[in-house]
Length: 222
Image (tube, rainbow, N blue to C red):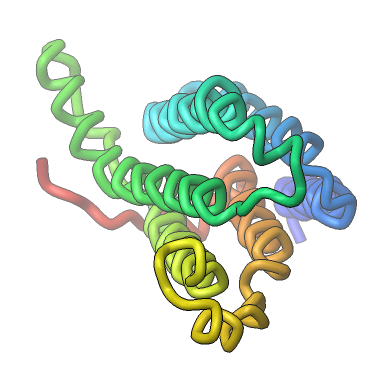
């Protein structure tokens, strides 16, 4: 095995260890910090690859939007619900899951349209576009975000089913569905695992071993 491949395998093993630690901790702040650090690290390591630079920049922008929405709008808007555990959480849950769905939808289209956008932007600046491509890893990202959205929708639907009495249904009917909480109690774990997969895909694009695998690209015509 070549020295380059050995180094790539070592890096990937180290990445998996760090990500596994963040995932097992189930600490959302730690996961966010690790993910952000990963984005900037990959962006720096592959700063000469315009495809990865634009992809990472897109991730940073979308994640900044997500954090801003929760920090400055959602959490202050539902402060009373956070403070009083006896209050219904139906609309907090609805807004939370719907926001996650919209963010994942943005990420889905951001990944698929990244190559055409990059090509169009470079063309407008009269710069060469021959190095613009859509890596297979980005297609994998799009598939992963589809799963993210599916989980978000399941959680959103279940949220309303569990709170039928809060949206106009009788208590007799609502009581039959109080126990529908499979996604609710597993949501964090499911999203954590999926986020771990996103970590792997993101970091794989910085390793020589994975870049050999993803070097053959799928092209999207602008």
